[in-house]
Length: 147
Image (cartoon, rainbow, N blue to C red; front, side, top):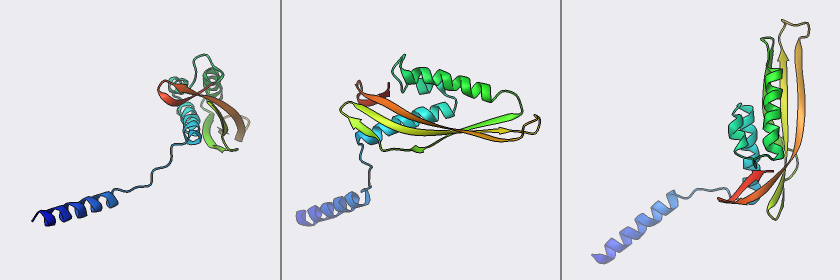
């Protein structure tokens, strides 16, 4: 009786273990650094400027860049005759990890659509390529912050 119970228990345990197996991406430093840069740009794209600043060192280059982008978005979205679309294109070079520092290369594209209420009609686009430097923080352990 004990033997049947033990075998049944092991079979059920094996089935549960096999059905619960999923492939989890490896959380490498490269992946984590790219995720922080991606989240930073998504916050700016969604006009969540305070959230974007949470990914930066206070008073750093990228913290100040949030204010520049807020101004850029506001100026190019003024009036009812234009529409600004910003999107994250891709990482255009491989991410470099050197100790507690990382360099992530991100490409941002903006499309400004001008409607016929002005003299100019059409689409104007800009491509921004940024070399983003990050530093690994020890609080909480392993988090990356934009410099």
